Image (tube, rainbow, N blue to C red; front, top):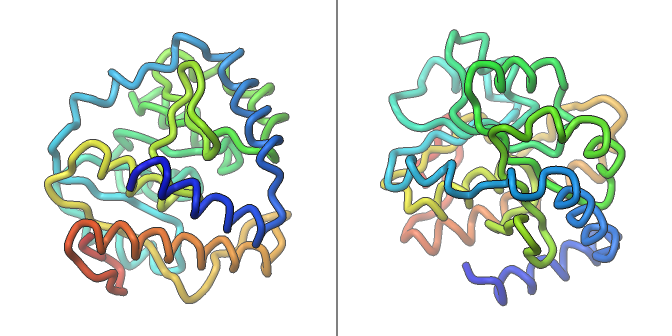
Length: 224
């Protein structure tokens, strides 16, 4: 995917979910003002070309975790607690800082690189927590890249993780804990809106699968 293709998807997502792109931009500007030059894409270059496991918080996560193989792990923030329960620490965490701050802090202490995403609804969380992770951090946006804030494409934590692996020229990508039929429950979220987000995640992952010469399958571990 390139930035022009992404902007087409982004416009459609904003219309469907009533997202204000200006709010997304302001959030990215806020994140840039807090982490600034500490946002360093060079931190993740050491993983270029690796096999990646992208771990989401789908309803089949418990089934997926025992099936994980060796590879670089990109974990969505809401799955961090369960993943660390296996005794492993994530290599990278994709987060908009709403997945449980205690688990994020634990992952960071164990060496995880934090991929912090700015969108219009998480500005308060960025103000409150982003500085804690500024030692090993990459800032991202779903709007236009600016300053040290990148756009690797993707919308939800899970599909952004897959696009990040693709950006790093992953040899193989495996999705673990991705269930596109049921939205995992999350405190203080609108179930209908969550289901819409899940459908967009599936659409974007189908696009990525096609670009990689594959078809998006289903199951606890999905090759991409």
